[in-house]
Image (spheres, rainbow, N blue to C red):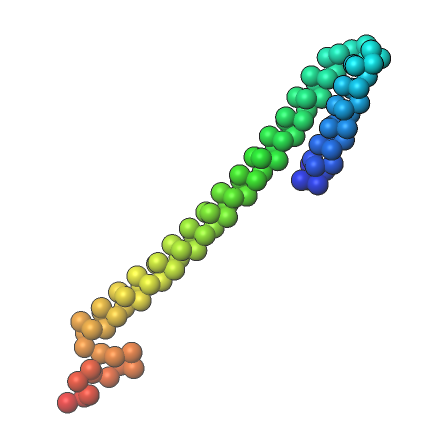
Length: 101
């Protein structure tokens, strides 16, 4: 089920619970266990929605960490190249650093 379907089902179940409580008060409800079943259904739907929110948040955090790690790897690679260039005595264009003397 999609989030929209769950939210619609949640609203419907809340309305059904309201009606069940009203029937209980007016002594029209024969099976009072329907009230607890509706409450449990509401709890299950809310749990699913919360789990999805948490998973989406964790996925976002992991994506941000992966992006940061990629940036760190690029910076490390660039620093390693600069160190190698400095050690070999050449610029990016391949010339000697001292101007070719």
